[in-house]
Image (cartoon, one colour):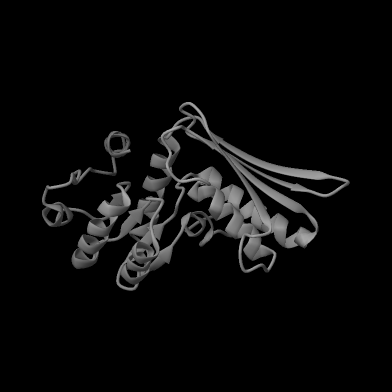
Length: 225
C-alpha cells in the first residue's frame, strides 16, 4: 500500500510525497515536512504513528483494521487535538454501500433477515472482515439495535481476492441485495488520497469516509465544498 500510495501521489501535480516511514526510521523528522499523514501500517505501527501525529499536530488518515480497544481509544483521543479520518475501508464504493444499507434498513425495519457476506484473500487474518462488521453495525444502528446479534455474517477466504462484500435482506416474499467488488487494491489508495485532500481543510475531530463523501454534500445541488 505504501508503494502504491507513493506512485499515485507522484502522478498528481498538486501533491508531493514528503517521505515514507519504515520501522526504525525517524518518524518525527519525516512529519516535519508533511501536511498530512496516511497510515496503512499494522496496529502496532499505528500506535507510533498516532503518537507522532499528535506531537506534530498533523492531520492523520488511518486505514488500519484490526485495532483493539486501547488502540481505538488512542485514535479517539488524538482526534481531540487534530483532524483524523479513521475508516476500516477507504473505498469510495464501500462508503456508498454503507450509506445505502443504512438507509434501506432504516426504512425496512427489523422485518427483513439480514446476511452480510464477504470474500477475501487467504492472507487476511480478521474474520469477519472489518468492513463486514462496519456494514453490520450500520444496519443495526439504523434499526435501533444495540449490537449486531440479529445479523448473520458469512466469511470466506479464497485465493487472492482483494475484497467482495454483499448485504442481503430477505423476507418470505422478497429479497433485496447490495454488493460491492474490488478488482484491485488501488481503490483504497484513491480513497485515502481523497480523504487526505479533504482532511487538511477540516478542524480537529474524528471523521470517516462517510464524512469525506457526504459531510458537505448538498443533495439538491449535487455539490461538495
